[in-house]
Length: 352
Image 1: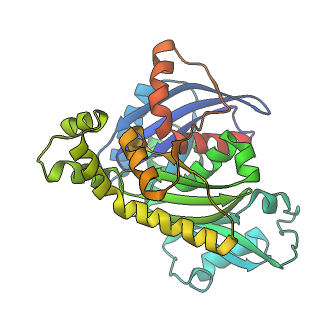
Image 2: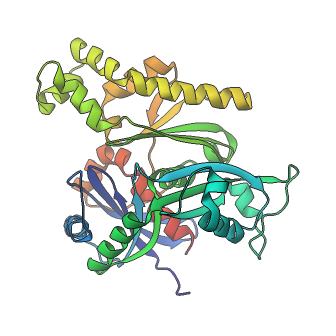
């Protein structure tokens, strides 16, 4: 296998905005951000040619000479499931998923490209050279299974080839977000229970981790698209006017915002209740990311509804930043949307 490059473009293929970061590895624990970019895209991209065109536009805005890309995909049709199985070599479990996914996942998945891995860093550290997971006291291991429909994988592969770049890895966006959090906040990741709420355009994702292990992952059919429609529908406001009113703390807009976010808050509360009931351990704050998280009114509303502080987290917390002054200044607002792209790039570089 060829040695992996020391620089990579992490690309988040979102449903509304494509985001990218250029990360360079300077040493075992030293990573440097040297560029980033984002670009709004059509919500429906139906061909590899169209996808390649949008990626090329993003890379043109972006610049940079790195030829390898690490890709993350926000895919509402994807599979992301935690299963418990007797300790099994990872390659054997992959074969079982491929040949008889219905028996393993209770879902027909012959049309999906699937992969799996133990859910915790501790379990991963206990993988023997032959791929067998070291036995634990319970005799079982929890695995994370992810999958995308074959036509979607084919479309992405063909599109990246047309950009004359190489796709080093392809992951689902929630896994990239989880990996980025591990890199940015290693002490919290290792020693605490934590909840990540990533608010995307079409969906929001709830990830709950506990001392390196992913305990719960679920998607909620609510995101920036529905939120925007909720803000502008009743009063026939333009999106720009709605944003201004939110920034000014308008009382009427605050109530509209609260009503729109109630269903999301309920789903997050249910996830917290399930986790705390199963593990008798409390969550004390919520780490929020995604474009919606840029609005202080949204963070405050969620904090009030959930009774827990909702705070932004920075995927570049442990990275060095080497950017021109203007772009560095803009990063203070944009970092909240770069978690997925950063997680893809970090996953690639840490495996180099």
